[in-house]
Length: 66
Image (cartoon, rainbow, N blue to C red; front, side):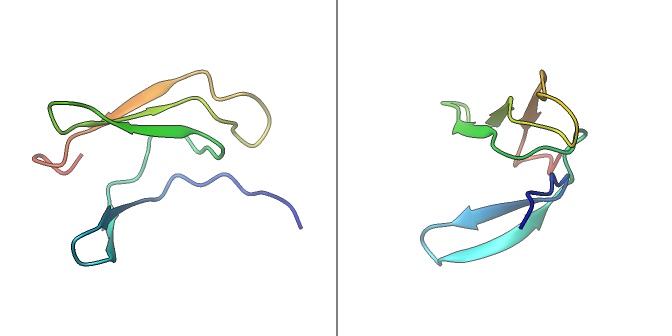
């Protein structure tokens, strides 16, 4: 069984235990971190793409949905 990097993203609401779709990431990746920042944005860092280390970061802004 192989690991397949994805560009899709979902948000989890712990109050309802429901996942909902979010905008896709600009880079396919797996094994990355996702950190909630104090201002409500989510910072996605690192991980791996299909052929290398994903040496990039992305910010998700829930207010704008992107």
